[in-house]
Image 1 (cartoon, one colour):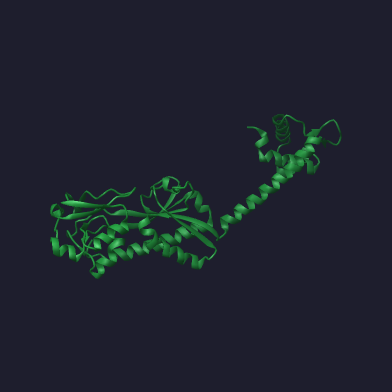
Image 2: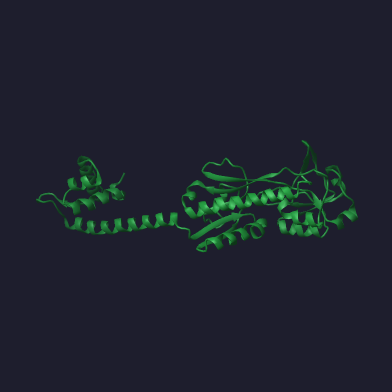
Length: 316
């Protein structure tokens, strides 16, 4: 290792000058004198210059040694200030937290929680970005910037990532009353050949190809399809009576199922549920604001998931 880049050797050098000798510096820094002496000589060798004038008693600095001492003092002071600031930032409940989630739930589900958390911690700032890749790749956004917290589908055994399991997100097949009056009500996936399917495609999702009930699977074979790349556009078309949807998560259709704007179809046939998580890289949890926020967010999201499933237990 090139000693020029070793901060601890510079610390030894500065303390040797202040204490008057390498031996005195060793007592303060708890170092072996022979090890310290070799380190100073290696520093001089790697720099290609002499720092101490050893022909005098007491040992004094050479002209270049004086320059090195003055700059090394500034360097160590800057390092001390940097570490103090980093330690303060680790404990500080202020500053930016970057959160990534799907566009479809960012505005409706996550944003209200960010506002609520900020009411408790007004010095916290948020940057909510669209999740474009699953974890762990999703911890870098499309602009190459780091992400602190991810809310999304996944699994809980990714190395280096702490995951809070929120529950299973159901998908309930549904259509608008207008559509069902015009086209009839499908009973099973076999009936899809007579219907229009509204499907969703994203970086995380492919159109649902089959539905499952009591361990049995049947393929979907729509008469025709309309494909969407936006959950909100799909939902709008669904409510307008454009077709039947198997791809919409319960989060997006629960209110409409409860008030009758949408009706469940294909009794208890559904796409497999998806596991939902709040995810944070382990290193980020050293930052108190991220750890506090992630714990709080996971609790609120889990409560929401539990309430949703209770509200729709008759359709699951």
